[in-house]
Length: 314
Ligand code: SF4
Image (cartoon, rainbow, N blue to C red; front, side, top):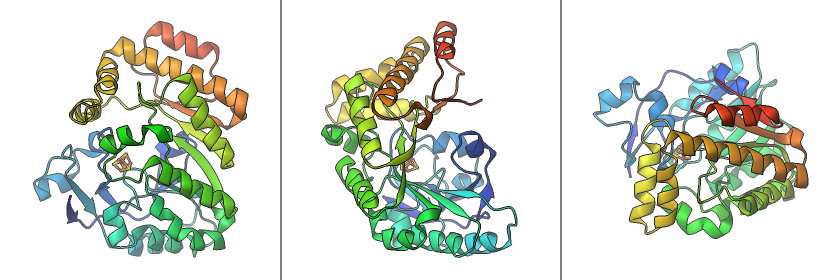
């Protein structure tokens, strides 16, 4: 994977969108294109108009390169010191601070150090890379101020399927092992089950297993989400699965490109999560992030009848 470096302007930025999601009041991003290369990643669709892509002469939807800014920790340190109204920072929201290119510059740890050395800040880490565990020594020093999250996007038996669509992220078992390590060290954790793809991670049994994993590691909250249908993510995922010989999974992804099927998939996902969380955890912990646009009217009505654990977004 090719790596570009690109100097960005922001350090710690307020994020109304992530505040609405209940995830964080601020965001830090160490680049513009994540080298984990997940086929369903929605970042490209969100920031496709960013001038960096034109400047570098690359397509935002091409997953064969990363864009990272090694100078991010300097701006983060500046902002952590000068911003008066402090809060919860998510590291990161559109890329991953422990991705391979971020690791080259030790950006995850440097950003953590920059934020945590100033009082009044807390940090929500979100990564798909188990290398985060090497920074648990630092997190232990600030254990009350850091929430550790490793996205668990499928059950461990699906590791081969996931390796096709999350090619440079850690395997699911490695991410679970890192969460176990965090739990053993007494770190604060939360669950991030996102995205739960159709035909891969949305059956009642699979969801039960995922909720049990999140519960076992002491998750303070359990966030979950359907796959984002915007951009080219579904097409790329469908194709990668087909190329990898996972034809049934590829067909399941293809099916939700039809609005009515996507709507039904989301509705069933919510129901299965609610049932499982009510059985194995506490419904107050569930935060299903739902963009209702795209739902069929009857599905929307059904969800409204029991929206326990649903976070309604625009
Ligand atoms: S880890 Fe997250 S930011 Fe990185 S490619 Fe995957 S979905 Fe995108």
